[in-house]
Amino acid sequence: MTSRPQFFRFIFLAAITALGLWTIRHFWAALIWSVIIAIAFWPLWLRLKNALGPKHEKVLSPTVATITIGITLVLPFLFFGLEIMNDFQAAMHFFQDLKTQDAAPPEWLNKIPFINQNLVNKWHDFFSSNTQDSPSIHLAQVFNGNFINHGRAFGANIARRITTFFFMLMSLFFLFRSGTELQKMSINISRRLMGPDMERFAHQVVLSVRGTLDGLVLVGLGEGVLLGVIYVFTGTPHAVMFGGMTAIAAIIPFCAPIIFSIVAIILVAQGHIGAAITVIISGMVILLVADHVIRPILIGGATRLPFLWVLVGILGGIESFGLLGLFLGPALMAILMMVWRDVADGPDIQNEHAKNVQKDK
Image 1 (spheres, rainbow, N blue to C red):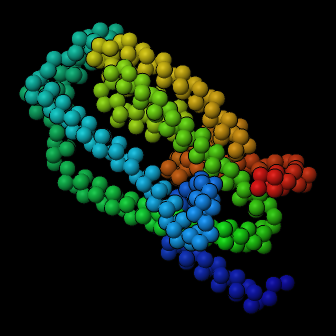
Image 2 (image 1 turned 120 degrees about the horizontal axis):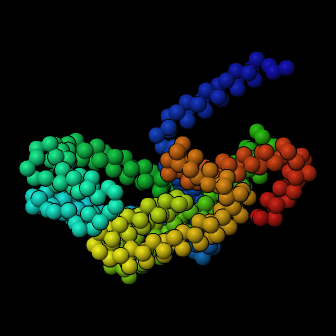
Image 3 (image 1 turned 60 degrees about the vertical axis):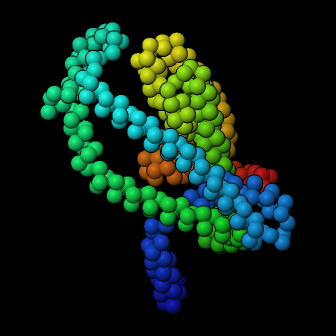
């Protein structure tokens, strides 16, 4: 029977833990991101630490690793962000010129069957320079009247994101610096609280995060690079911007067709039918190979899940946790599947899983 001092000690520890977690609630995203990045880059970190030697493993090695990762994460977003800003300004000038010139609809719009007349009427309504109630007028009013408010909100959001990013880098530095000690402490605590099974679950989370990084992020970037080359080859306007957008969209399975379909529509609008067909066919081939061959091998092999459950974990994770769900979703599904198999198969399969953990180490 639990004594009264032990009961109050448990209440005190639970209250302190809850209060501490609530205090740092705004930094949970940065902490989780730092853990995910540390798990993903841990093998490379070990190589760097061994190359620089034990003398520098507490300051120089984690500093170099953190700065390198920070630059690697910032430069692509900075580059594509500037490209998107420039292209957005060009698009706004383009629509403004169409509105002031009261431009006629393109010829291909009249060739679309069934809905061509409706589209032509919508074109005239949108770009009419004489109608006060035209959508283009309202669009201009939205951009002009609310620009300051949107700018303030955007600036505050950017400042918060930058603060979170630098806090994530600070956390990543200390994870690299004291990661081995933290790992040992976490294993000891998990064994005391939940027994040896927790180590298997933690090992599966590590495999899931690395498999998701390889299968989603790296494969998505590869899709973006390949399609970006095709955009340049077919004469797509702003090919670099669309290549970056394709890479970001391709991180989520089956989302890349949204971007290369838009590219094909733009090429059709310019009269380049052959180039549009090339983009569609090339995109479908790349998508078929990446999403149906490479990703199931990389993610399914690491998470030990059928790709259908991996996909459910990704989409459900994004809906529940945002961008973090890309990694948390598959990891949670992998743990859930492990628990299911343990209950269904009994202690023999648990011993087999434990041997696999030791083998992987």
